Length: 111
Image (tube, rainbow, N blue to C red; front, top):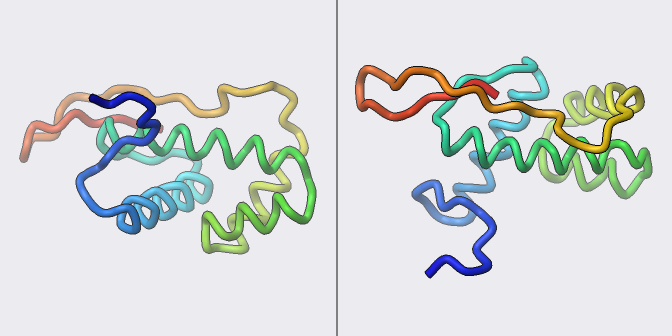
């Protein structure tokens, strides 16, 4: 049973999942959109929402938390500059479904 399990497994260890999501989030904030599988996109969307909400606080603790998640100071500074203009309470990311990939027929999405 999956009661109280909030994360998606993504086939790997905990450290691999954290590194994967960190890299995907860094590329998402760098390029504004990213194309990946649907399950990775759903997990990435949750992380990106949390990071943007944290960046809206504009404190030193939130800066350190974001840098520790992304491992890239330039992208973290970019998030903080953009988060100043955000007025909405959530819903910063959107996951759009794409046709399945030809090689292994996995569902794809754009975040």
